Length: 393
Image 1 (tube, rainbow, N blue to C red):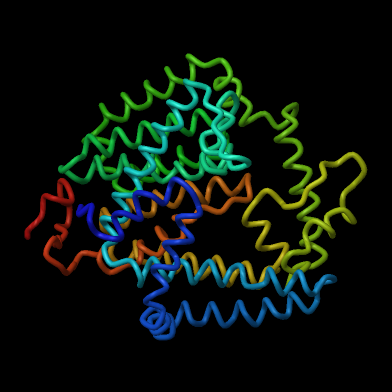
Image 2 (image 1 turned 90 degrees about the vertical axis):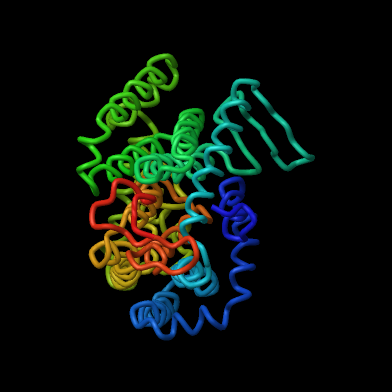
């Protein structure tokens, strides 16, 4: 990993704040002609963008507040374009992914130390390291958002530890500090998403279970000890499955019920982008939770853009992140898939956006993560290599 390369530097810094993600998007867009050409030549991506534009316009025209609808209509298209920046704009995706893991690890360490010191540092009205007497806030990302910034580091760190030989213990340390940082935030959605992502690392390569069963047991014991030593964290974890008395859980169920009723009455093109907050009130029964969003990214797309938009967007996403694994299932792609998977589990419970996630998704389909690579540090992946470095040069 070359720390001087652009993709490495930006990959390391992206977990700290979404603002840096926006800057990196701008840098990648300096290659807009090449990226636009790649989109035009890639039939699936081009077709998804065109189809979502057409169906989005229809959804917006049918919406009560057409101005808000047209402003919000391009959201899925913008997401696809950002993924395209990862696929065709990032030059060294392997270094980018490694750097994200290390950046998450450093952020996790910052969160842990800030929590221990109960820091509350502000620059005027801007939070720097704030509210660490509670769940924490780093540069404006707090609670669930802060946890989401850390998630890629957990599964990614374990993945690189398992498959690589250089700096493997550093990646494992980054995974552990990322996880401990998530625990500080008390984010239940992030805990569930991270667990699923780690399980995916081993499920996608079952030989790892036999080879590294001691590591799996050690990590499991570490997690149990950490949770057991914190009564607050223990209660938080136990509340994940409490759907009877936990107000946060029951409130979400009420919101999902109301949202589903909205979808049933507007199934094809939805209620229109950007309409949720106003229309929700007309469907909300007395005593149900008030909401400005459905607290679920899948419902967010389905209720706003309808089943047509939902199928187009998530169908394209499957072609971007799942199909490459069937075509060329390399360790790099498996690690990248696990790194982004925690986010898509987390958003079952929260509306979130993390700047580096669509870039990771784009990297999954990047040709440099495939078997045949090019460049001075390229690898030719063996069928069942012991590590990413244990290959024929």
